[in-house]
Length: 593
Ligand SMILES: Nc1ncnc2c1ncn2[C@@H]1O[C@H](COP(=O)(O)OP(=O)(O)OP(=O)(O)O)[C@@H](O)[C@H]1O
Image (tube, rainbow, N blue to C red; front, side, top):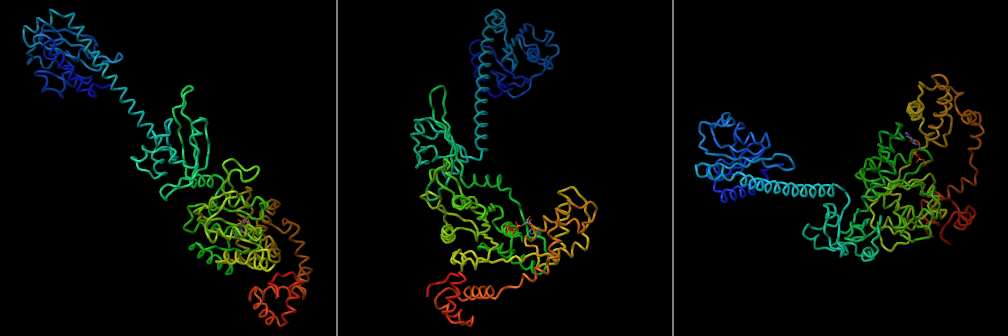
């Protein structure tokens, strides 16, 4: 508690005392700084008073003191000013705030007449001085509470401004009375504008009156703020301000939907950051794909990654995303084959409240919305149902999505990387995949070669996966026996790297020494070796299958128009009618004759 905070009040009090009792007055604070004074003391304000003076004594003792005989009094003998002292008498009274001494009021007589009046009227004088000290004390307390309120307000403002949701408090009519910085940032309002606004201006499509009437808490309500052309989609909570049974207003908290979705992504998708250097393989064939992938990362065009199951298509998709300019934004994978057909649409595009029985209150955002600004990875796109292919084509063409049961089109900026282990061209010919969509997604095609075609990579992958498994299982297997490599090289690896990974993990578990031997391998691998001869027989393709494949190739090359069929027939060396007949037999879809 500091008298210096109320110096002007203290000076006023000292002048009032001086004019009532006609002596000089001076007041010091608890550090013995003179903070107010009349007469000769006025010029000494700001100076320090000697701690051995009567003021110092009263500050230490906390009791009033009257000195009738300056320069002879015991206290005066200690004072450094005793030689220059001109006083006739002195009265000092402590100023206390809640038992704490915060200063001293001193009255000084410089004439005999003043001294007589002071000494003669001691009792009344002391009472008067105590009242003046109380007055100063109450001013200090008042100042302290004002400071405390200012501090609380500042503290609250800082708390509100450090929340990354917009906060707006309104009175019972909806008029904005408090807000934080994030709120004016979200609604793009200036500080002057915001106080003239009513919450109804910001939540146009929402029945705010009902909210006031019902005075109920609301959580995560979706809304659209259209603003002056720079609106946003968001969610809000509303909490009524209730004291007793009376309502004083509502506190709203707002978030931009893309911020919310960003947090959901970070928390739920457990983004695995992947770089091209993390993808193992140095064979020429594989390196070429990596180079293509790196180039694809520099662009925002759609990529179609084709390759057998387990060849690393998702790894490539992730690496492309994390090498691209979108790397700080979400990477959202969705497996189109793993989600039941009736759910896939709402998973991809989201749904509005009430879109179907069982739809969640407030609706749901789809993967496209989650991927906004980033990349959506549509795995197993070859299994996407035809009606969704049509919707996807629209997203690609118009860059907007429409939620299930929704009325609005939501602009979306998500890069699409699709992958499939099916022969998509074949699916087009079979009428299972839209040709126009195929061309749209196949802008940058990447073909990941199967493991059996990259023998050089097998060795590096085995050593990489061995380390990985040792770490995972806490084992120290050092190497793989050369005989095991022979088995690996002659095996077809239908499950590619995923299968190799599982095989190594199995072998590491089975191995009791430090080298993986043939006996540690899963039985299917050694069985395959003995069966490989049978398999090479089985590898012989029938004439009919060859014929079918060549026809598919010709149609894929020349196209599926009437004119193209004639050209395809010529290239195949058969007549047009024969080609039509055979296409029908093989179930290859074409334009009608
Ligand atoms: N070149 C590689 N280097 C390291 N690990 C790899 C490599 N290729 C694949 N893998 C591993 O193999 C597994 C399968 O990879 P991924 O899921 O990317 O394959 P995919 O082709 O997308 O498979 P699917 O077609 O079944 O979806 C993963 O555990 C992945 O880490």
